[in-house]
Length: 211
Image (tube, rainbow, N blue to C red; front, side):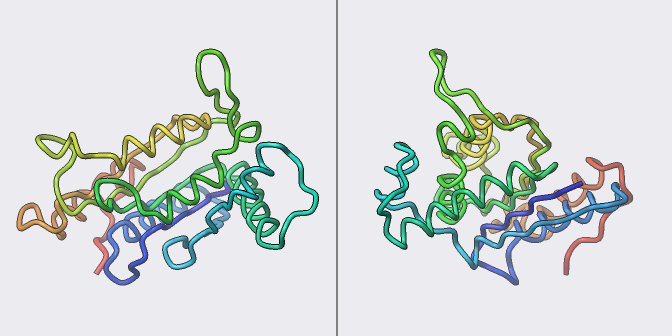
């Protein structure tokens, strides 16, 4: 089994999404005899933003007389798409920033969402070109956005589900830790609940909460 593991938080030591995405990968490794993990830390090594030159090339499929910067951006597009196509399971660590995903993760989505390569336009709307596979999203939020007043401000999880679905990836499993910055439930309880969810998801004994 090939796993593509993506983290998108710029924080290292105190990142809940990193803790949870790592726990998901560990759980997958426990359930499969042979696992190959391709890891991309876009939180500390962001992918390149696409310039107008590179975007025009992607749309027109004309690749002559391009600048070195555009060639590097197109190479990043091709690499990101190839890694996605090759994986059997996708694991994404996604913290909520300002009601949405991090700019690092948005940039990766802009790389892989390419008409004619990962989706196509049809009369009824976009059609995904990727074979469906399990996607596990480790979602972390400082507040509560899955219910109540916060629900109207959640542009993180619905956006990820929408964009991945556009590509044909609809087998999505959300592991959520929210309220980590609040007095209740607070970080410890939120992470413990998410770890329990991971254990139940993979039918494993209770996983130890990260220190």
